[in-house]
Length: 368
Image (cartoon, rainbow, N blue to C red; front, side, top):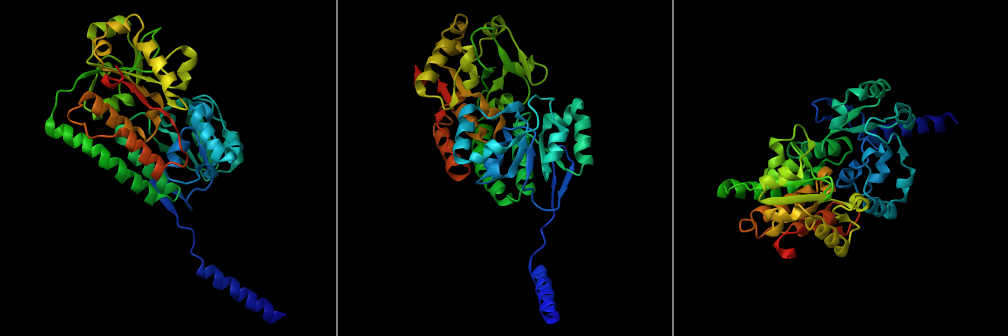
């Protein structure tokens, strides 16, 4: 019996030596903080639910990694339905809050996650400072990422951070190469041709009444700039979001009018685009928007230089397709060869875990 125990002990020691230890992983998050994990995170809390789609570019089953999420910026209904159909376990993800400043530390600690992923806005929000300290005091690392505030500079670094911390470095690098190739095609061509940058007005969450919400720095401003346009809101809106009067818009008469919308605008009579939207619904909402009193006074509307785009591109690396679409809209002769629809289709085929159908953009001369 002693020999059997000895052999069992020797066997266990040999197995331990033969089994590689889990490699420690390190990443510098978007705020410059070093995040160290004993092994790639397999149990995550997302402080922003929409970051599930970013994880989805890196993992075939991102839902399996998510133990909890804050539903302050939830997936749109059609995207959630697509994930739920493929990954029923999404219903088991626990809520750890619902509002921008509603974050339950107790719920997060009870889930015992390997990592909490927070948006950059949470790093700057002093009302969440105590929550951040309590989470880290419980031994739970926090990593900050950003696909929203400054997408031009933070998208690929943020994806790399998630890739490193979840053991998907190769997939993150593959998407980065895909993204960079398309972005450089746009930016290099603009640099070489140096066309005039047309004035662009971005009508965010577009609805004809109570006009007009718009953006200053970051978010859609970055997309417009990368595509070769000049956002007129950047000069008058302090910070990220703001509002201008319809009179101001008409008096400045920008060369291009870009409205953003989604399913969330259906109840407000606004522009309806995105996942789960059909062509008839999109066309009717765009016609109602651009046909409203005041909007018809814009030269961009009368002359076929008004377009609508899905607002939810604003928090996803898939926005590379939107940049292509806008570049083609602003400079059609320079970018006639671009195919943003094919770019989205390739993202779906190579990276995304679920298939989405919908209308992502509308308008311009082709729709006259």
